[in-house]
Image 1: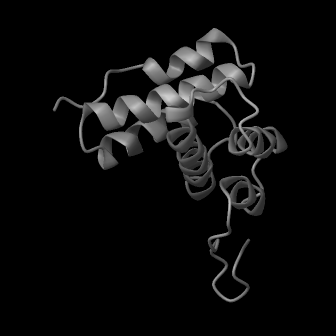
Image 2: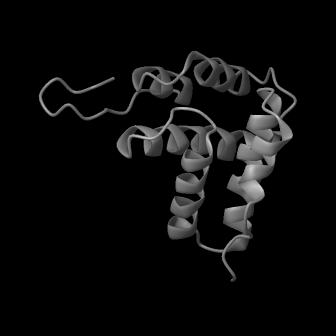
Amino acid sequence: MKDKQTGKFVRAGRISERLAAMEAPEKFVTHARAIESGETGLKGYLHKPALNGMFRFIDLAVTQDLPLDFHKSTIVAFLDDLDTRSTGSAYWLRYANAMQEVAREMGYPFQVVDGFEVRLGPVS
């Protein structure tokens, strides 16, 4: 939810709640809830990076005024941000793979899912 004085988003509890507070599309909020409750086919080790990746993806879209969906410009912004924050190729691959699985589970076409593999992660 937004702080009334600053207009910035304040931290809520679960990622699904934080996404809802950011007015993310309902399909993202619903999928985050499904991951949180273990109702997806996502492997356990991908739950945390998938949820954190979804939040970061929507946060970047909001702050950079990009489409709130798996659109090429938003995916590229996410990957650029991942390059900046990455501590190595394992970190980069974990988040890119998690977001790829989220897109696949949400029913996006192969071209979107493959968009998270546009380039390789940073060289360690």
